[in-house]
Length: 117
Image (cartoon, rainbow, N blue to C red; front, side, top):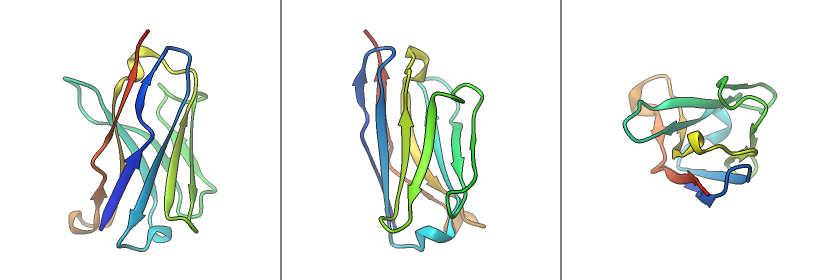
């Protein structure tokens, strides 16, 4: 089982990034998918959630209206489009496949997003 994130980097305030997470080794379309983030010295925070078929999404209040989660089940990929980025969005971003038990819950290795001028 693997979740591999990409797309992070350094961006100026107001800029955009698109994160991708490619899944393998499990039935991707059977999982709700999440994006989390963790800033230095802070707890991991749930940023966005998308349903199995992509018709329902939910966002943390801090990113609502700026971030968009989407998925392509044919490509086993979940995305996070991040617009109007702020310095407080700086964090390591993780994709997560929440299974019914810890044994069937999967995490990616994370991708660093840094928002700075």
